Image 1 (cartoon, rainbow, N blue to C red):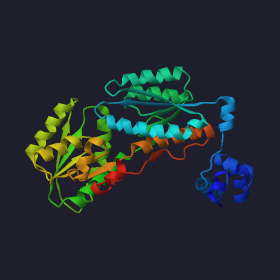
Image 2: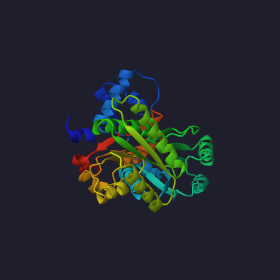
Image 3: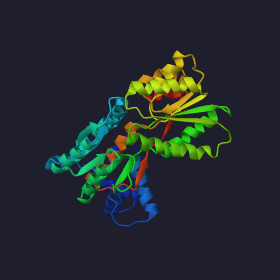
Image 4: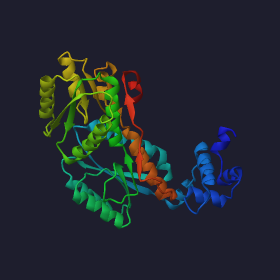
Length: 353
């Protein structure tokens, strides 16, 4: 069938091509009824092949229907690139679904003021918003607020990671434990046996401890099976002031003079600049994320490798899943949706800028 014909295909035509009834097609698309695995797989393959969706545009416009989704999170001026990446995925989703009635309401609170997130959630709930994607702080009073909203009938998808005790529809994010294992694999492949390895860890707030804790757990589990012996040096920073933290990091690197530096948070720019300044570019440096300030350091191999968690795809996927549910009645099929991790080197960096 020609591409143009595929794009114009109706439900009746698709059902006829699949040799099933229109009702069967409708039910499988909306996860109703019980059908054989073979039939459901054939339908899903056809839907993907023809990029087929139920067209609700006319109905939505006739009813002036809007599907409001609140994207609730937090921001930090220090890690501005992180939130710019999230916003990029949100804008992609708006461009895709706006004509179908999607409206995104963004509420970001200051990372240093977690209680504000509770106020934001209460305000949105009182305004009648029923659908939420929440990048939440891991504090008990916030988790209680979210769980109460779910019990009131609100639809919630957790962004970044699942939180025990919150019965959300699903979570969308990065598998931090797996990323730690990947860090260990990169170390084993890139560094000679006996290398001294400095682990950079930031723990100046509860959020960092949870993320880094998962990454370290994956790293140490993988290192148990390593065929090489390394001298691991672990240092944690507690200063919330960026300049003080940078000074602490540089002092440790100068004192330890490690062969390898593994950055488990977001200090790559500071470390790369210090290595260049001190003529130690031969130090193996591996970390997380790709952002404008470090692209040049990746391209000249001062930074040897970066684990990229693809934040735009995460925020886009979260919106897609929730919109498909509120608009089409399609429930998420998994508890956790982990987006693929990429390893970025100098030679493929241009694809991730």
